[in-house]
Length: 161
Image (cartoon, rainbow, N blue to C red; front, top):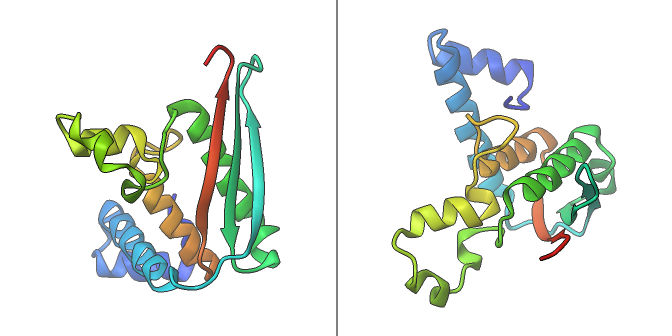
């Protein structure tokens, strides 16, 4: 699941000499490079998505921003925000990215990397595709949409917490 165009997939397959796994790695890397280039652009549009887990015991509200209303209404973008909301419901991250974690919290952790993988959304493995990290999924959506996309904030509710 790279969200890349057929032309990009074909080019990546040629570069990888027919190795599908290597082509997927190349496409993900290209997606991250494109995302890095677009990071400085303002993302003032977007959507607020919600997810209520079966049994109505867990709920998530999520804000994801993009540059245009056109992208905000795109089916791939809406699927992305829905996937993120379900990811948050399933994995209970506390932060969006590593840089959001206060240094005080990290002082008490044995392994920063393990803490990041468990508590930072962008560092998590995507529950719907264990071969994909959330940051790679974001990069592929940025590459496909051609716009800066920012996961702005989220909140997760659970009955009894």
